[in-house]
Image 1 (cartoon, rainbow, N blue to C red):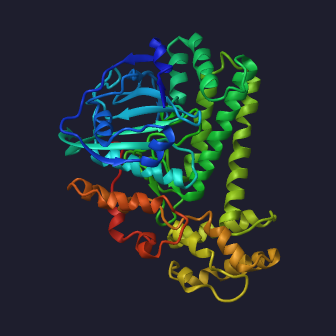
Image 2: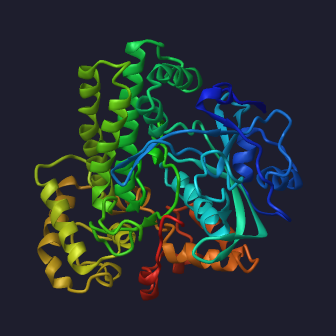
Image 3: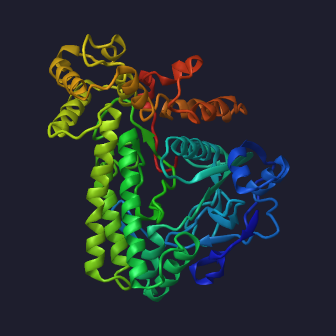
Length: 477
């Protein structure tokens, strides 16, 4: 393991800040597989002290980054790492580069009126979600370790403090570029772009052509990520530009949620009553956010090149989504009726509040001939309303002629049986707050194999209970 902090050399891009240690920390979770990948052979006491801010590694230079962002459509000229510190950049044995970012490390110059702390509830939610997304094959930050403490933190109620150490190839956000553009310091933007090229995309040149190619990659990676969100029914909840990664990573897990009953207008964030970041709005918001980034890069990339790159967003998103949806339905070749088949399916799902993940997983049991399986019928409040759709779907399967076992295997490889439903996360949080991490450990093992049959844990794959509808997730989550 090699440690450095290239970003901390940009003194104008943030501030050097020492973490405020958590008192009496306890190591609650450690991602040993990721630690091994990074070459970080630390003892459990070392992980505890590092994640709690009590003892950093010798080469670490903690640094709070400054950035701006469009939050719920309105521009905030200065945000930044208000409760997080970039501790260093690890060069792993395989040559990959990872930022280590400590969240819950205390106040920084960008804390505004916050206390810089994190609570166990939100920290565990981030740990669980980032690992769940990783094992679903969706680009994301990763969780390395989690510590808890009896130190009280005040949110809607007094909660136990915590901190999570997360890792990613880079934590650069759209908001970094917005900050320098709107603060009259646009001459520093090429330095940030060069940093991305040096650390992530060494095949690009440090000139306008290279910057244009970099922006095109950001556009396409963002489109791919959001299409994958839609395919698994993931709602981010706070798609502000400061929560958008330059590498197309799912970043900053707060009031997220996976769909239970299918609802295209689903709002997972109680702090978003207008539904700006509703499930069906995510693709459009991604495009809007990229336009804000393009504006910030307009001094180093020609307008026409920016427009051409932005024009690739919709194609990449729709092609990724369409191909993914055909795979979810066990279809291979494109047919002209596919959009209508998808649209009618979703209309019926919405009308009958069909569980999203259970529907696609159980659809693998549907053959090209014969009755609809009982497991599917159990999800439908009015099965007869589906007669026409099932007839069309079976005819479509028959035209492709794929053997049932082969089709089912391919569908199960893309339709997760297990997802991180809100009520499952809540149950793990409630136990963790009582000092019992067994449910969190069980969820992490379960979600590491989301596509596999795990018969002894089938009850985790059932639709959410009615009481789960009352769960309230907000920006403080």
